[in-house]
Every structure is written in C-alpha cells, then in structure tokens.
Length: 202
Image 1 (cartoon, rainbow, N blue to C red):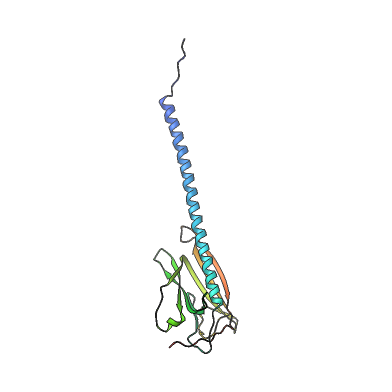
Image 2 (image 1 turned 180 degrees about the vertical axis):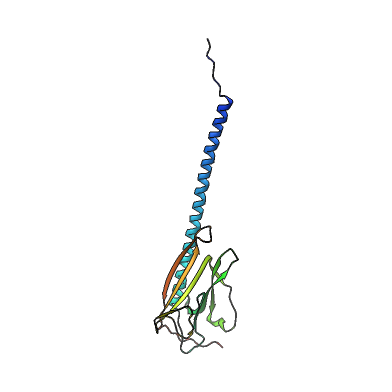
C-alpha cells in the first residue's frame, strides 16, 4: 500500500508564520535600539570633544592675556557670562577676543561664541562675524581670582589689572534630552607680568 505524504495544515502554517513574525520583530527592535544607542554615544562623544577643545582654546588665550601700562585701551573685562581680553594670536598679532553665550531658541539651548578682532580695527568700530565654538551648551560661567585679596569674584571690575586665575565651567549636552549634560571645569592661570609696548589707536 502506497504511503501518503503528509502536508502542513493551515493551523501549522499560521503558527509558523506567527513565530517567524515575532522573531523578525525582535531582531528589528534589537537592531533599532543598538543603532539609536550608537548614534547617541557618537553625538555625545562629538559634543564632549568639541567642548574640551573649546576649553583648551579659551584657556590658552587667557594664559597669554596681557595689559599695557602705557595704553589704557588694552584692558581685561569679565562677567559670569562674558570675558573680553587682549592677547597675541598664532601669527604674533594683537587681537581682542570676546567669549560669550547666546541663546539659540526656547528649547534649543545655547551657543558658545567667540569674536576675534584685530587691535588695529578696535577703535574703528568694525566688528567681525562671531565664530561658533559649540552649539549645544546648557550653561557656562566664569569666575575671577584676585591675587591681591585672595578672593573669587563673579565680575572683574578692574580693567587695568589681570586676575590671577579664571575658573571656566561649561555644561554641554550629552544626549538627546536637555537634562542630560556633562559638567566640565577648567582653570586658566594668567601671567600678571605680561606687558607689551603697544601704541594707542587713533
């Protein structure tokens, strides 16, 4: 008697398709989650790298800040949210550097900006375009240490003297949520003895 081949029933086919669909959904969910985590980590690393480079750049500029006793136009001015100082750039030219925070929108955080203005154009009032340093800053603050009275100040109100130290605190975004931030702190030591003979601008 010939044997009869057994075919899959409709119920068995439906069960198989269901199991396959569940497995496919599980694999897709896992891959989607892994890609999302990778992108978040990549964005976080990029934000932190940019922030560290910004701190290095600002600290280096502050360390080369100077005054000139014969030129009252060479000053140092600082608040908790902005600092303006003169220093030498990498070409050996004198320039005024301004660092400050500007809002990007109600829910987009803040942008850290820098203006580099050649000394020769300061008196003329020509303001160059600001340079974007970091676009995902939650907050930042500056403090100034006086070597004379050994105290920290939120504002530096003696434009013809230099603080001994500047404390820079930068809070940058570290994820897709505004509350996910990383706090970075850097101290810049200023050389109070740095003076250069610079003529006053006409």
